[in-house]
Image 1 (cartoon, rainbow, N blue to C red):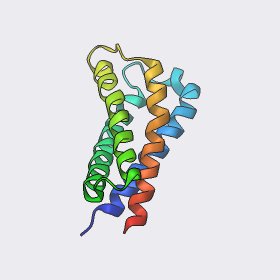
Image 2 (image 1 turned 180 degrees about the vertical axis):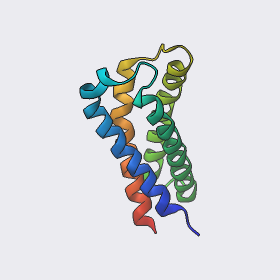
Image 3 (image 1 turned 30 degrees about the horizontal axis):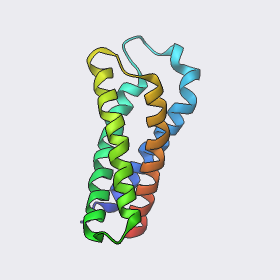
Length: 125
């Protein structure tokens, strides 16, 4: 059984959830309980989606060799978003010293990356 279609659906759903949360968060931020933040939950799904995208873009890049510049670019984009995401996420988990500006950059780039790779995965089967 192939897991490509479910992976495509998953990464696209996470992309949509990040965009929806980013746009609506200012409206419900004040109403959230002090010990619960929607981003704390969503970050786990974002991390899993990033892992899927890193794996799929790396496999595509490896299979394509040096001729496919798009495969290389997508892998580099995935690595760049991961490099921004992981330390900021860990800083948030450990002592809440994460950088809000970095989150806005991540929450802008990540959905683009996830949606693009999800669309490519869906079309590849």
